[in-house]
Length: 282
Image (tube, rainbow, N blue to C red; front, side):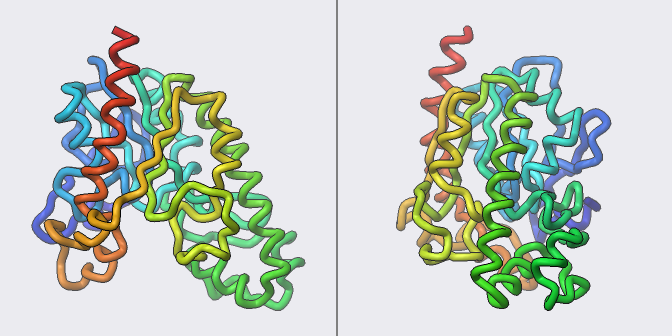
């Protein structure tokens, strides 16, 4: 990821790398030789367009260094295959893992970019056989590709959703095994954590994290200390882009982000859980 891809008007992210990782994270770069809490996640954890995102808010409240390892458009694949980041999380006092969408990972049906997990690379021969009437050369982004497949055949699309869910649970188990048990899963989404069918939800294919259900999270609970649900209130959502930093060209993208109020509410949910864990570890 180039520096100019994560800079926006009036807000400087001070991009930095840790160790041998090829991912640029939000700075300033933090020391890893003193105790810290690690935050792993996608665009929300990174805090695009926001001056003080979730990790910074939590750091101020708990008085403990918080290392922001959020990756714009990142999914599980951006982290699980990165030894540097997995080691950084393993060595943290606690790691907060934002629940990321099942669409952002390579699977039996298609491959994504290893760091920009929203980028579609190629369809497998299995996918091409199932959707022989689709030209996959037309797609650059996974969500666009999935939306087109669903429109073409909801019945065949169910096969893809099942594969993505199975791959996501397996990949998450792998990542949590590498991180270790001192982990909190964070559900940070406009959508409630539930088992309501994805196509019955208001967001449908625009929802984040896509295709994740409460039952899938339940499968991971034995590997983590707790699951924190941070679904923003109507008041927080109504704040929109107030207080965000973005150029006119980025206005639409900014309007789709969780507001500053959403980050503040999520921090308020996380702080007690983290304080309890850190107190026991002291």
